[in-house]
Length: 227
Image 1 (tube, rainbow, N blue to C red):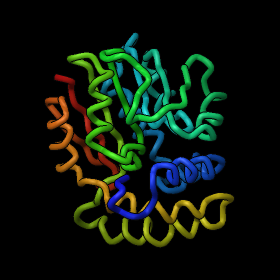
Image 2 (image 1 turned 120 degrees about the vertical axis):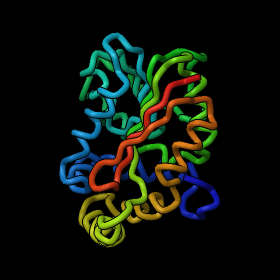
Image 3 (image 1 turned 30 degrees about the vertical axis):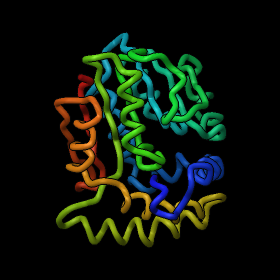
Image 4 (image 1 turned 180 degrees about the vertical axis):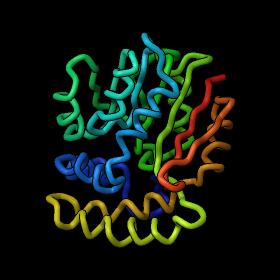
């Protein structure tokens, strides 16, 4: 997220994610009609090789980190929400779960072969700085994958607006802590479109950036190689 939006400051985002942690997995299934697990699997397969040292940043409750582990990665999951990590830890005892900030990763440079982020970069206070930090901890030639909601195009656009602007916030209100999902539509509108994000990735130490669209263009998977 950006400070300019006037919506939530970083500490407010942390508090929000702590609050929605109990309903996060359920809301992911509902919002994506269960497709988020498939998209995470595709993300992991696109960059992870057996034995890869993987950092899954903004890991939330750990589903993408686990998908990377299934592909044979040696995975570290990092998130700044302690409550999210409390729900991730029981899902895998072999993943190292760390509480930390993507803008100040507690790792030496070139520590990982792969970095991934699933539905998390749009909440980072400084997107460019976050990408530079991911590049710092990734070895040259290493791979990055970012899975994120994006601005839809074409026919799905009005349906996306109805779903995310009206229905999802209503669903959130009936779940404990779910009122925070009124923040979701604003965070998506602020986030760069798929082409703009690809250009920013290329500007922050990566090359060969490509993206694929899923869900009728409402979700984008960007992959790139560290220069």
